[in-house]
Length: 330
Ligand SMILES: Cc1cc2nc3c(=O)[nH]c(=O)nc-3n(C[C@H](O)[C@H](O)[C@H](O)COP(=O)(O)O)c2cc1C
Image (cartoon, rainbow, N blue to C red):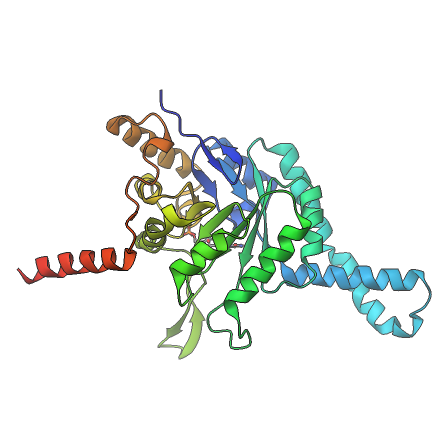
C-alpha cells in the first residue's frame, strides 16, 4: 500500500503536491477544484505589503478621527476613505476564513513583502482568520539599487513576522544571493519552518518589431526545474527547516527528482495553468506508479536519497562539470 503523505512545516499533507500562490488560488471555486483533484495544500494568492500598509494608514486615521484631534487633516482622511471601500485586508481575511470553512486541506496565506515595516502586525490577523501557515514571499530583486543590505532585509522581515505569529512561518526566497548556499542555510536557521526555493521573477523581453520592452509570459517552462533541484540537492542535509521546490515542476517525474534531492514537497503553478487542475491527478498517479515500481511504500524512504551530502559541494559540482565535458571531448 503506497502512502504518499508528508509533513511540511508541521502540517500533515496527504501527498507532496502543493499548489503555489497564483491566480488559481484566488477564488473558493478554484480552490475546491484543486482540492478535489488531489492538491495536498494551497498557498493563497499573495496579499501585497503595500496593500496592508494602506490599511494601516486607514486604521491610524480612524483612531485620530475618533479623538477629534486631527480635523485639520480632512483631505488625507478623504483619501483614506477610498481605501475603506477597497478594504483589501478585510476581504483577504474573509477569504481565508471561507477557504478554511470550505476546504479540508491546509490553507497557507501568502504575503508579498519587501521590508520589515509594521505590516507584520497585520500578519497576526491573518493567523487569527485561521490560516494554517504564512508564506512570506520576500520580493527583493537583485536590480534594486536602493536596498543596500539585501540579506539583512530578509532577516529583519523574518524576525518581525515571527514576533507576531505562532503558526508556522515559511519563506519563499530568490536565488539572487552572492553566497546562495550560505544564505539558504542561514535563512533556514531563523526559526522558519519551511523554505521555498525559489521565487520566480517575471522577466522582461524585447519585441524587435514594435521596438518595445515587453513582459515575458508569466509561466515557467519544464526545463526550469533544474535550478531548484541543484540548490535543494546541495543544501538539503545542511538546513534546519523543510525545503520545498518551486519553479519548473511540470510532471510527477520532476516532483520525484526534487524529493530525491531532498525536498519535502513541491509547489506547482504553471503546469496547472497549462493542463488544468485535473493534472494534479496525473502527477500523483505518476508518483505512485514510480514508488510502486521502485518498491517504496513511503516518501520518507527516498527523500534526500540523492542529495549532495558531501562536505564540499563546490568540489562535487566541479567533478560533475569535468565528467560531463570530458565525455563531450571523446
Ligand atoms: C499568474 C501567476 C500569478 C502568480 N502570483 C503569485 C503571487 O501572488 N504570489 C507568489 O508568491 N507567487 C506568485 N506566482 C509565482 C508562483 O507561485 C510560482 O512561484 C512560479 O510560477 C514558479 O512556479 P511554476 O514553475 O510552477 O509556475 C504567480 C505565478 C503566476 C504564473
